[in-house]
Image 1 (spheres, one colour):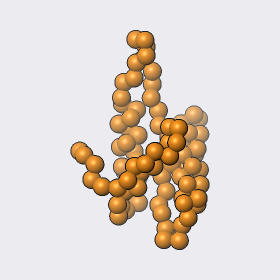
Image 2 (cartoon, rainbow, N blue to C red):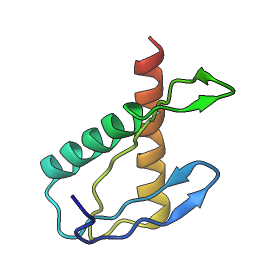
Image 3 (cartoon, rainbow, N blue to C red):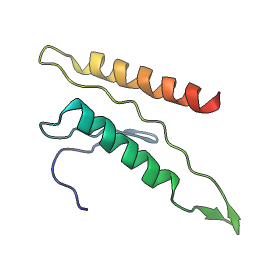
Length: 88
């Protein structure tokens, strides 16, 4: 499928933000899982050696009184929780 709407700016380094339009939280979690699975299923080779790809997604919902800083802090915390769980 193609992109249905929303924004996807690059935040820096290897971090990206995705802002879907009017999404429910369950749908956002489903989309994040599908995105992560798609990335991890990709083949990446360097000098004939296949290198595994991994992804850590920090997903959070945005409330009407949220600041950018609060949203980013929650998303970062979720991403690091995901990385820690994957390493365990």
